[in-house]
Amino acid sequence: MENTAATEIVGAQSEAGHTAESFGYKQELHRGLTLKDLIIYGLITMLPIAPIEVYGLVAQASMGMVPFVYMIGIVAMVFTALSYNTMSKEFPISGSVYSYVQRGLNPHVGFVTGWLIMIDYIMCPALLTGFSALWLNPIIPSVPNYLIILVFTIINTAIIARGITLTAIANRIFLVMELVILALFIILAVKYVLIDGHGAGGFSMAPLFQADKIDLGFLATATSIAVLGFLGFDVISTLSEEVKNPVKTVGRATVSSLLIIGLLFIAQTYVAALAHPDYENLDSDMAMFDIAREIGGDWLYYTFIIVGVLAVGIANALAIQSAISRIIYSMSRDKLLPFSGVLGKIHPRYKTPFNATVFVGLVTLVVGVTVSIESIVQLLNFGALTSFLLLNITVFVYFLVKKRKRGLRAYLKYGLLPALGFSIIAFVWSGFDSRTFMVGFVWMFIGIILGAIKSKGYREVPPTLKDV
Image 1 (cartoon, rainbow, N blue to C red):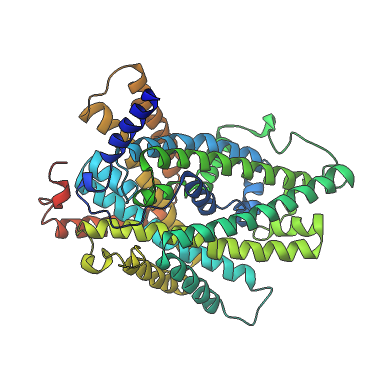
Image 2 (cartoon, one colour; image 1 turned 90 degrees about the vertical axis):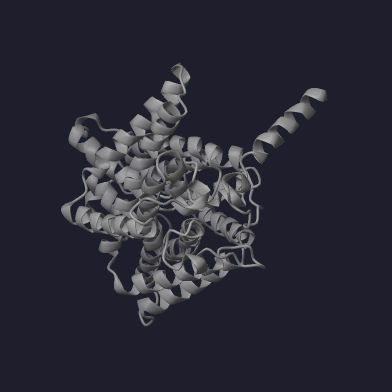
């Protein structure tokens, strides 16, 4: 009894040393989320049925080995996820990679990192609502895409603005919906193959591994596809100030959600490959939907489209919009963005970054209607992966250089693991096309200029970072 009580006291003292106040901020956001809520949030963000968006393209690029591509993805991203785990325990505050690099590496580099990840998150809801409008077009062709984007944006903004608890409830509802349709798809696919004798006619190793088709070029392509397919696991850390026990919970939820979503990706793409092994004749945009029609008929086809639209246009976009509003709030309370006095405000009743949420909703609407999906994707990839590179560098510098951690365990945890994460991300990053680099570096340059203006030539830092 005494030992248990002592442990609880120590744990409470440790948690107290990692509150928002201990980092110079006022605790304004409502702490109501649990480990379960965060895992659900991570799953919704990465989207359990995400392969529906890209299955046809991935199948053709991987010569039918889509599940194998996602296996590579889990291995590739887990090292960066571990870096998030490490930094979330050290700095359990809102802002995600912005806060981690800002406090672990350098305040000014942290601003540029936040600027980079901001373009990733702020463009993503527009991409997701754009996809939803595209999928709905065959069902309701008379409704213009901009109206669909407007409706989804209003719904998401209203839910997020009302509070994180309401967002968590919405996440659970959408997750159940996605898992039910996914279970139906897997069951009907197994029946289609094993009982009805269609497709591959039985279990096969071909979707999982074909030694004669795998070489360095294939691995390079597969890694690039897989890493981009798992983007979104990092948004969990944006909710650190709304979690009951962030030191223990945030990192655990980040790694757990990545592993769970990876298994879901592998399971659904494996049965899809068995049901339709001839990957070369798949439609690049509607492949998964077409397979659903093969195994279950028109009702499953249309149900899959409707669930996909709701999952992507509302659930997925909801999670991303919630995340970016927290990052904008974090940067604004440090007075580092234009209109920080407005964007850094918390709603007195809902305890949410209300103004930042509305701002993101407006940007989503404008970008979704005016910018092409291809251009949005280019900005997303550059911003996310560049910030991941800086995060892995931060883990190494902060723990091994600044804090002088020593010993075999420290060298493995703070040296080898982030080095592997950095190397994998750098490999994918180096493969971007010239247009992606051009657009990405222009955005980065704008951020560098803005940072110089706000910090008076990078000589000043926010009051909360004077000792960093």
